[in-house]
Image 1 (tube, one colour):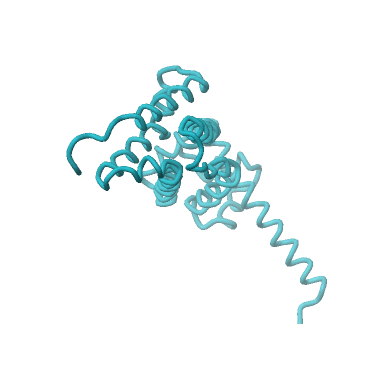
Image 2: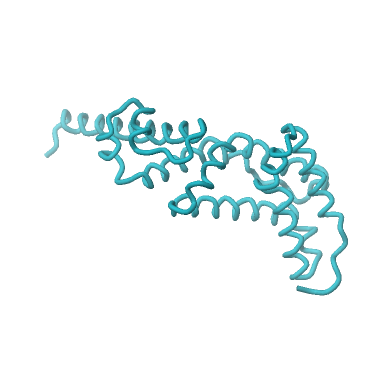
Length: 206
């Protein structure tokens, strides 16, 4: 039978382990945000103020730290992506969609850019980027369901594809490269989205 003292000690050890894992994952995020595209276990340990041995005591490999870092990023930022009612006026829906994405893209930009360097070696990053795209696409499909649903299958898919491009991270990043301010990036994405929605269906079916 486990004594109260042993149980309390075990709980304390578990709590410390959880805190240490979070500290290491946050150190990885901080390094990515500071411009280190591929942090090593040693740099993560140094940034977290712990020994290198402790890193591998809590994680089997760097991929495990990435999985925890992904969860932290979701907790911090992705709650901003919320449903937008399809019954709202089109301009209101466009504004809300773009503002939500601008908030998330702006906050996660350094880590998102670093992710590009990790894609070739990290199944976690590949899966997370895919999941994020699917999440954002599903939000567009629900928000603009009336406009998408009014078109036949091939043209509906084409409209959704165009909406995805207009409101994507890649578009936000291209506007950043052009030197546009966040407010101008938002306005440009709103213009693109409204333009896509206002275009008549192309002739022919996919």
